[in-house]
Structure formats: structure tokens, C-alpha cells
Amino acid sequence: MEGKKEMVRQDILDLPWEWARDKIYPCLAPRRWKGINDQKVVTRTFLDLSVYYYIQMISGDDMISIWINRKIMEQWGISRTELDTRALENLVKDVRIIQDEDEVPEAGTHLPEFCIMTKKDGLYGAAGILDERSLAGHAAERGTDLYIIPSSIHEVLLLPATDAVDEKALNKMIRDMNQMFVTPEERLADYAYLYERTTRMIRIVW
Image: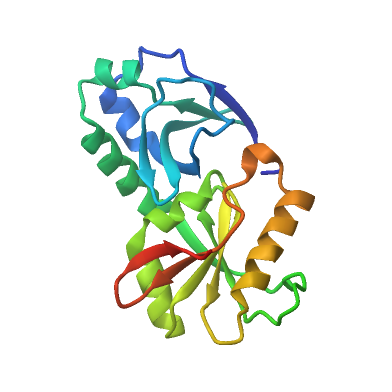
């Protein structure tokens, strides 16, 4: 997130739906996320996480996120389904899966090659896992299920699910990395998820 300044505003009620609808995105974060103080913010459940919604704008050098609460949604006269559908439509246009050549820190096991999933601007890119078609396409290219490693709320790592991966060591690595490098406000989870090609579903790796 270097080079981007985020300003969170929740009191803006005069933005018309016709203007805002192409700028709405989902943010995937923990339930009762400390990054938002508004108790009336609109959410839905996804696995053990929550999906939040925001309007994304650029003002000069600043990235501004306006979180959608019930009052804003009621003023627009839209349903939660319409809000979620529009946010996902905007998201899939911006999802990026990037090859990363950096070495994954050792955690008692050798980890195969992995990729980064995020948005093209890098903001709240962990929501990319809501784009099931991107996950399915990447899994098909790799010919395997995919471990989803929650790097932060801004990105996840996609790791081919092979016998070489020790799930306990993988979860330990995630916990260690969170403690050392990720602020509490930007942590997504302390364990991995698994995308299964046959069911096209994501499950938690305990």
C-alpha cells in the first residue's frame, strides 16, 4: 500500500447511485473488523469472514474509501443483493493473479511456486477470492486444487495443493508472518483456505 493514502469517510450521503455504482467494490476482512467503526456498515458473511462494501475514489494522490452503511444504501433505494452484485461485477474487472518469484519464508517444508491474487490497484485485493471464475481458471492451469494463503486484507497467495505441502507448517507460517509483518488492522486470517476444483468451493484448513 506504499504511495497510497486511504481516507475513510462514512458520512457522505449525497452521492447518487448512478455515479457510485461503477465505483463500488467488496472488501474481505474479519468479522467485527477493527478497520471500521461504523456499526451500521453493510456486510454479508463469507466463510468465517465478512464482506464489506466501499466506494473507491482518487483525489489527487489520495485513495479515498467511503464505506457503505445502511443509511447510504437506503438513500440509493437498492437492495443488498443489488449492492453485492454490482460490487462483484466491478471486482472481476480488476482482479489480477501475478507471478511472484520471491522466495517464500521457510516454515519446515518446501513450498511449490505460488502467485499473488489482488486488485490492480492493490487495495483490499484479498476480495479477489470472491471471483470464483478466476480461481477456477488458475486451478485449471495448474491442474491442482489451490491453497489460499491470507497475506493481508490486500492480497492472498495462491499455492498449488500438492503432497509436498504440510498444512500444519503452512498455518504456522501464516501465524508467524502475521505476528511479524502484518498490522492487526490488515490481518485477514491466521490459517489457510483450500479451493477445491471438483466442488468449486472454498473451505478452511484447520
